[in-house]
Length: 122
Image 1 (spheres, rainbow, N blue to C red):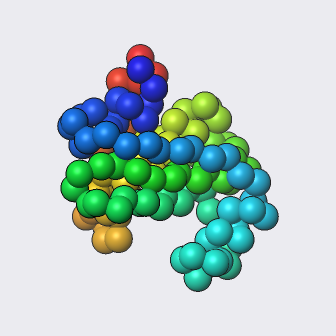
Image 2: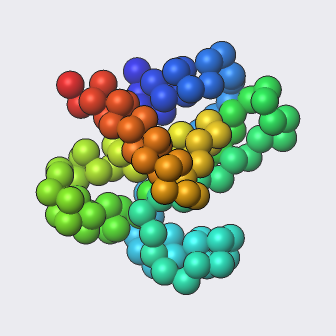
């Protein structure tokens, strides 16, 4: 079972749909961040919900900034693989409705990321 499938199964139940995960260098993800979110810097993950019928299907795209992921893995003292997995989980959680726009929400989301990361890496 893929990381995406595992998160969706537990977070969204029986919803059908399609989620794409795209890996981009800094320049490309910065362009997306600038164009869609009005932030002019590279980032590690961006998720876009593409649902036409909210609540019925789960369609989306998760963009991973692989250069940022590599840098963060070194900074956090984790493997590149672990950081990539965390970013995929984070993006899919956003597509499933999780938000991290406040410190309490950010902490709750980190706990959920750790839950899935533990299941996947063990």
